[in-house]
Image (cartoon, rainbow, N blue to C red; front, side, top):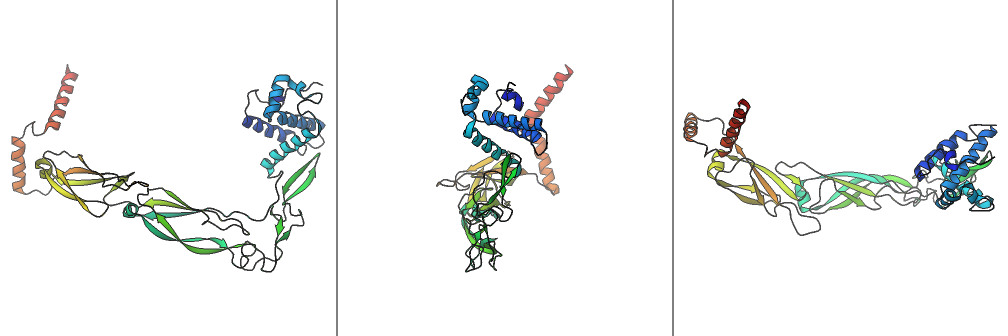
Length: 375
């Protein structure tokens, strides 16, 4: 009987990518797997057909040959057809797929040493601390290498032995149907070693829980959300394995006066109506602890910004600083005396559009808009 087209067998188009091929293969392999269809010769034949199709199409060179010559490319001892090579590819295919489905496959011998987990520490600092930089000491509860057994997990004077179930390989094989499956050894959990006489201090884990004091250098100009990595300061590894890393996540406390945007600082300052009208000056604090004088010109409007060059945050890895922006708001006076009210009323009566150009211009536009509606 003539062989079916391999793309048809997997149910994919001829331009299917690797991901689509693998997805289709998984679906078909599970459908026709002998364990799901015991005693069904037709399902077993389909299963073999699916594996042969995927084994060919997953390999770029084989796929190119198949696309050009079809099944003839693998006949008469052609491109990888039959023989030991084909069997090795089949085993590789099945190992890949069952490793993904069941955690099985061609695993390597375990050493029992496992890398420790990475740790996270949240650190909140003030804007002033971010400006000047500082060294902070933090307390980190973590797992450290057991001093009693030096991380081996075995009681002093003894040592781990090879697992009898897997012979130290960390994996065991089991025959199932016409192929052999590998899985993690249930006795040693893939480590290849067992500890018959565990350390009394750590219970065989090779690490104990302890609180450590670490010094963290906070560079000047550091920004909110920055992550600092301390290599090897995370959780100790199991049975002498390498330690993980510690990640410091920095956040800045809200400030009463300043808002930060990168290296620039912003500050809102309320000024009186008379200062905005007649002009004047005021002093503002800067983040370095000094003060700077801001001159307000006559007729300053609300929202006006004044720029203080170099009074912002330091820029990391440079000698430069950002700027500080002062935005003024004009405060409307309250709790007026009778005399103050009279003076303001007199001013209002004597004022004209020249005194209030923005409002005069706005209401002129309003009048034109209404007139156009009525036209």
